[in-house]
Length: 155
Image 1 (spheres, rainbow, N blue to C red):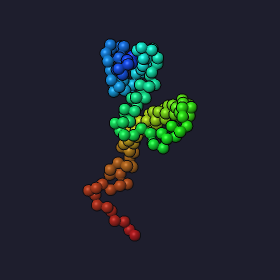
Image 2 (cartoon, rainbow, N blue to C red; image 1 turned 135 degrees about the vertical axis):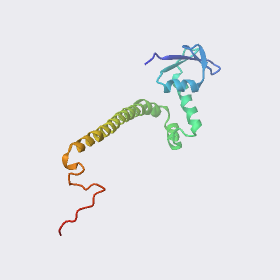
Image 3 (tube, helix red, strand yellow; image 1 turned 90 degrees about the horizontal axis):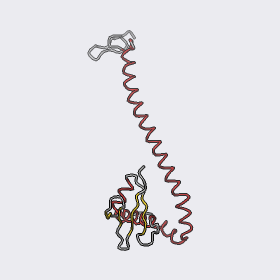
Image 4 (cartoon, one colour; image 1 turned 180 degrees about the vertical axis):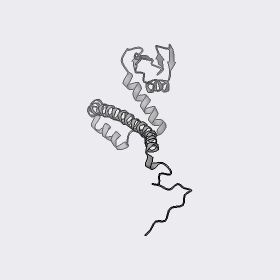
């Protein structure tokens, strides 16, 4: 993974990419993160780490586009029980749950791809096996060919 990208946040709310020496938008930062880059945002005047604030802005902007982030009842609970519950929830449970989900999903996707590959290989192998079995070949008498009239046996 590439080094952490340092962005400077100025008082006019603009973000400056120190790698490219250019101003960037929240949307650009979101795209970088989606590509796997890790970012750190530092306030240009105080040198305070404001990464969490900017990333929260990105999440809220994305939610605003879709008109949904979290259920209203859950947001009410967050406000009602305050900061300590939120910190504990996000630090301990949500992050661990998301990582477990992503690991499980990757594992399942990999296993499913193997099954599909196995099914494809098995189909080819099965066709070869059936071709090599003499009693399944046309004219062996086990199954009549489509042009052949079925023989009438004694009852």
